[in-house]
Amino acid sequence: MAKRQFKTESKRILDMMVNSIYTHKEIFLRELISNASDAIDKLNYKVLTESDSKVGKDDFRIDVKIDRDAKTVTVSDNGIGMTADEMEKNLGYIAHSGTLEFKKEIDDKENESIGQFGVGFYSAFMVADDVKVVSKAYGSEEANIWESDGVDGYTIKECQKDGFGTDIILHIKDDQGSEEYSEFLETERLRELVEKYSDYIRWPIHMTVDESEWKETGEKDEKGEPKKDYVTTKVDKVVNSMVPIWKKSKKEADDDKCKEFYKDKFHDYEDPVSVIRVSAEGAVTYKALLFIPSKAPYDFYTRDFQPGLQLYSNGVLIMDKCADLLPYCFRFVRGVVDSPDFSLNISREVLQHDSQLKAVGTNLTKQVKKELEKLMKDDAEKYAGFYESFGRQLKYGVVDQYGKDADLLKDLIMFHSVKQDKQISLAQYVKDMPEDQKKIYYVTAETAAHAKDLPQVEPVLAKGYDVLAFTDDIDTFVTNVLREYDKKEFCNATTEDLGLETEEEKKEAEKKDEEYKELIAFAKESLGEEVADVKISHKLKNHAVLLTTQGNITFEVERYFKEMPGQ
Ligand code: ADP
Ligand code: MG
Image 1 (cartoon, rainbow, N blue to C red):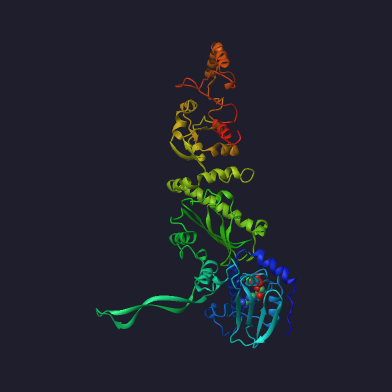
Image 2: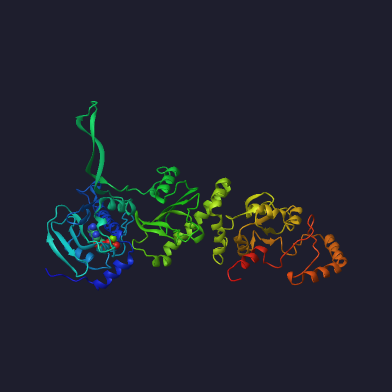
């Protein structure tokens, strides 16, 4: 039979696809395994609806085999298989997806086929210079072989094959300079890929792996003990665990199990402070298992840190770090999100416009917020530990959220209370306010201890009001963005008029202003340009003089700008 051309401008599209859609060539295995799994799903569905089937659920399997001499990797399944026509239709077109059609046809919740766009199979050409697809459709006597080098089109011929199902045989490319392909002929490498991307495929993935153990040789040593040899044997093994932990109920996988999973998967030595389970049904059906780490990873506050959640489409990893689901302020959250509604070939560009994902993101953000608020309420100590690592992130978050969801973080941030000498939430501050207090007072200071000794703090504390010590540059930016909390304005205690005096005190003050007119004039003249104004202060009790600022610019902010390069 003459070679047939791909039905689209093959070369250009294949090139584009191979080089741009997938940035990592290693995902070819994930694609082929998920196709195999789809094919089994389809047959499984078919036999479920058949009365006298000879195929049992337990017979289904996927095999990954390596032939180092022939330089091939073969992915086999005993799924539904393809007829010659189907091969033509499904593998000849690039953007044609048989799975999508199948989905439309039955539209059954039972069937959870993962493929939705027809580009997955072609990822094989990222690592192979020749691909053979040997397939026998379930219920058919005839088998066919499809073959292509991925460039010049393909051929389909009749051939021999024992059972139904499909073998995909990849002839792995030779290494080319820095481009390494021979790694894909290593058992351990492929096993690693299965564990990384396809662990949760619900059909067993078999591989022949080396297993070593001490075995008795049958002989005895000098002491009369049985002699032992370390022997390596080839064994057939199911290398995937088949059930994702996030699909298990809390009973099947308790918090401790989830924490182990977290440490293992996200390489942390410490337990997370929280495990969040989300199970949603409706417009988008998905499950998520999220974790709030107890400590920031060493690179968290650097550019190297890569935030994001793992996305799965029905147990198949489709994106390792999807940073678009949660807002930047929650980038410390780790975890997985799995939905049969996610498409396998989702790209970062698509992601941002995907309304389903947006809905998922909105809900997950809400859940994280809820969980943190709960933690703060139920376990203050644990929250304090978390806050030590991520408090700054939350405060930056408030500023970052400016113009977006301003309320998202206001209940999660804490400031140092001068009165209580510890970090408190704004809700706590407001709760402790005496009835006549109208504003939330703060001062900026180097340290909390320093804040307490500031002359400006004295009169506020004297009224029985608490003062928040802003020791971090970001703090004033936070209050500038928030402006108020629970309808109480933030008030910088170092600004001019706190309005704390009673009518009597005010009259007294006016009298004093009059009395010391000459002294003030003298001070103004002596200090000249150094100061904007000199006034009699009515706030001081134990201090003689205080320096204060006008308007919203605090000393801290002033210094911040002064220290900026170029000033
Ligand atoms: P998708 O999986 O998104 O549909 P692919 O490019 O991965 O797209 O596969 C194209 C089509 O080829 C599939 O929809 C399916 O019809 C067919 N196919 C691929 N691999 C197999 C297989 N192992 N068994 C049966 N059909 C397959
Ligand atoms: Mg596919």
